[in-house]
Amino acid sequence: MATLKLTNVKKIYDNNVVAVHNFNLDIKDKEFIVFVGPSGCGKSTTLRMIAGLEEISEGTIEIDDEIVNDLQPKDRDIAMVFQNYALYPHLTVYENMAFPLRLKKNPKVSEDEIFNRVINAADILGITDYLMRKPKNLSGGQRQRVSIGRAMVRDSKVFLMDEPLSNLDAKLRNQMRAEIIELRHKIDSTFIYVTHDQTEAMTLGDRIVIMKDGYIQQVDTPQNVFDKPNNLFVAGFIGSPQMNFFDAKLSKEGEDYYVEVGEVKLLIDDKKRDILKEKDINEKDIILGIRPDHLKVSFEDNENTIKGKIIVNEMMGSEMHLHINVNNKQDIIVIVPTISLTKSQKEALQAGKEIDLEFDSKLIHLFDSETEENIIYKKEC
Ligand SMILES: Nc1ncnc2c1ncn2[C@@H]1O[C@H](COP(=O)(O)OP(=O)(O)OP(=O)(O)O)[C@@H](O)[C@H]1O
Ligand SMILES: [Mg+2]
Image 1 (cartoon, helix red, strand yellow):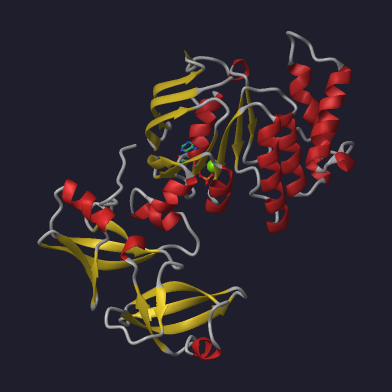
Image 2 (cartoon, rainbow, N blue to C red; image 1 turned 45 degrees about the vertical axis):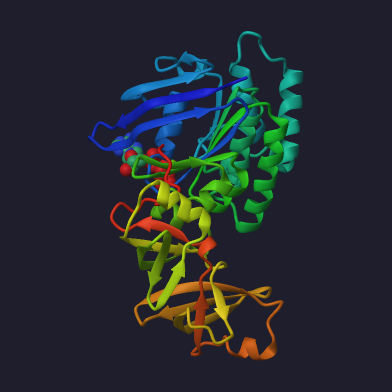
């Protein structure tokens, strides 16, 4: 069993760079947590502080309710896969994988046991044929799998992985992603996995921690970060192609709320209306967000639409990705499933055509123009 608790953890490097600000997180036993965010946001630094490889400037880290701030990395019972593999060049793949087991003293691990664990891990990772090679004679992807294997052979309470798939090609990455999901069920550990790939974050994590500039932006389940993004950054970061944004105005008439975006005036649905009322929000400038597959092309004569011009139509097979210029100033993306389109509708969706777009107020997201926070669903983190 292993729970982790980070309280007000901060990291200031010697050059006064504050890499991590006030990081608070409770991780449950056997939970799979993913840290995601753009390059330089503090993911590796946080992971290295948990492993004990980087000193903590402020705050506490607890493993199973014990403060480990001053505990040596080797005494934390943590296995880590590094962003840059960190394999021993003079040892074979087999010896690299056996290395952490040979270090174990009490109790010592027998050669038979080492052999079984290495062979088993190599088999799962598909690197059995390379066990006698040295790392320099492997491709980047193979080296990365060796470094996963080296962490796997240990029976650690906590498993940390820093971008373990970043050097693999797309096909291998998909395959390894599935294997990590399997691995997670075979290894009785708590996982923290770092990536800047939002697909990996969504598919692997029980909960995702989204970071930017050393600050946590949101901690939530994949479904919640997608449906209820805390702010504009999370909304734009999660989901591909990314959410479309429009400058808009929130207004109130009697008991009803409206969003005005261009020529369109949208009545806000009951659920959002009740939250706005409860928060006592009146008129304000907002940013309206809507995902590319939630905007609808209108083929009928409909007044309440936004007009746009198709710049590019990317045909993906089961759907079209339309790049649309709205009001000559803004480019957005709309995804249209092709299965229900008639021939004439398909023709109406070619580059150069003018089209009308409808909004469904249940599917829109509302962000404050000034703070960029989600007006409806902002949660403290
Ligand atoms: N040893 C160091 N000394 C000084 N600054 C550092 C050091 N290591 C990292 N930083 C800085 O701390 C910040 C966070 O770095 P970190 O490596 O944690 O980012 P990351 O989220 O892992 O990024 P990436 O996705 O590129 O790996 C960056 O601004 C980085 O330049
Ligand atoms: Mg990193």
